[in-house]
Length: 503
Image (cartoon, rainbow, N blue to C red; front, side, top):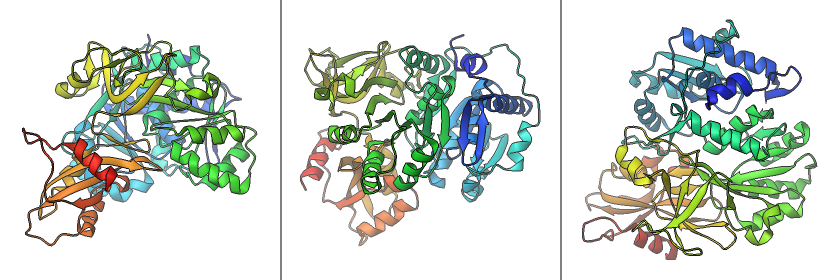
């Protein structure tokens, strides 16, 4: 079967020599890692977790988090990776929406969970895994049983493997259903086309609730990479790890590499083990790529999304004149440019919406057919990005049509921030847009109209938001007399973006 379950059962290495995962002092060979995945899979089955159930994971990067993910997938449960940046207000909304039967969470989140867990009625099993460096006895007790699983495969290609949230709103979070078949197709295609992570020592510093981090974890584990986990993105720490662990590959956001380069230029640590760095998630400045080239480190970038996984890649051998592009589509991916209003395919060089057809696409937003139909039409995914394809087949992204704000690699949905801001006493209405940010690509800005009954300040609104939203979602504030609207009363956010840019 072309499923992730098949890959875990039959294609994951079983070597007693090759290191599979490492967190601090805890190093596991592939033989040990596989046995622990099987033991945990059996423990889940014994606890009544079965195919189709949801297993939520709120753990920082580490051996425990990856073991839980693979064990759940091995029995056909759908994994729900949960961001550890979320506040209790946001966590409740997400967990209520996905209705997990089991939840694994790190010791860091015990206080938060005391507030959240009483409101999650679907939970049958909750396990505290411990810290990244030390697991709990409660978690380790799950590995006392058999490491053998029935060979029979129970999962089909269309079954949901990952349930990823493309919005953190408590009202109507979109739950993106990624299938076993889609992930299988991606992993096997990347292996076939050279498998950039095969047998490499990979530093997993990017949070593994992000699609790009999970992609690397899946691809690396099946191809025999050694995954070294860390939660510390401090540039000095990362440079030390690269040197000590002889790291060959890293995946992170462009802003991470900006600060890493600054630190390296001050310290000049040994980067001789590095074969290449990978980046993406937001626009990658070609100047950053060139600066890394000058110190002998290729910076490879990828373009994709939660719904489409990988779409295209660029690497230096493709030509420096294309460094500002998003690269060329993967061999099994078709990309075209359409007029966003009419759906008409546009000629080469014309700017329109980037539309994708590939064997990696998600199957839709769970229980949200309206949102699914907007972006998934006749097997083609409408990315919401504007761009064009040049005469050599390279994709250039010029902006976005949809309102989502990409801060670093994190998606911020304006409606979530608007929902919170509008709860502030004295606010009549609010509209949130993305405004340019030199480090993170974009950041949110809220335009607010008050009802005149309260003497509101920017600090009042910020304080209210800070209690309810993750730090990266706290918007810049501007009070205005009115919001620009069309004749239907819909806020014209394009005008607000221009106003924000030129103010």
